[in-house]
Length: 93
Image (tube, rainbow, N blue to C red; front, side):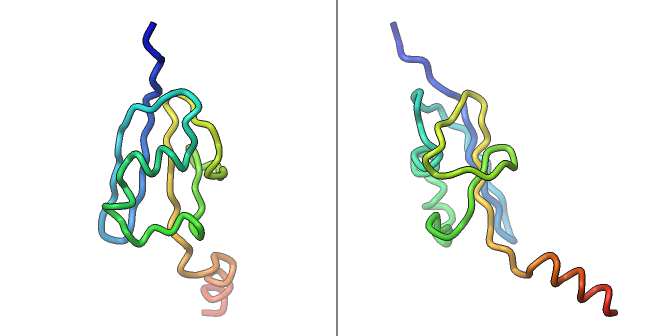
């Protein structure tokens, strides 16, 4: 009997482009393994998994999180400005 494969997506966007990579993965694949297998780190060499947060469908998770079929792994860019400070700045104007 063949091993069941998961269908997952790995996504990332910078200021100029976005990438959605669909791939198949073995059961018990982690977020980190999926990111490396997707090749997205070659496409966006500025990604630093030691610094950037990751999530599944907008829910933060760790790189060691086990994926389920249909999961969408998202790599988040660092914030350029603290959202609360941006709001304060708008209120001052």
